[in-house]
Image (cartoon, rainbow, N blue to C red; front, side):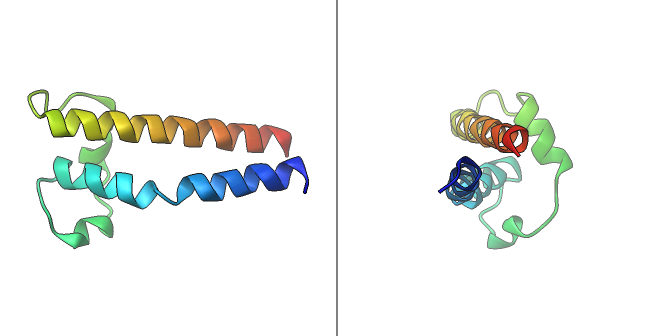
Length: 86
């Protein structure tokens, strides 16, 4: 198995929990438990909440935001490594 295949497989495996983290984060940001939040393309409020501190008193938001940031940072690093090795 080549290095590129291993990196591609790592990207796929790391991408599996993305729906969970994004769902958890979006439910807090948009203050809803509706399942349709996962399919709606509501990006502006989500991006502002990801890169700022829109709910500073909400500990669940801060925890979810930090987990999501960490997850996305690792995903970005894996993607950059894959792109550079290609």
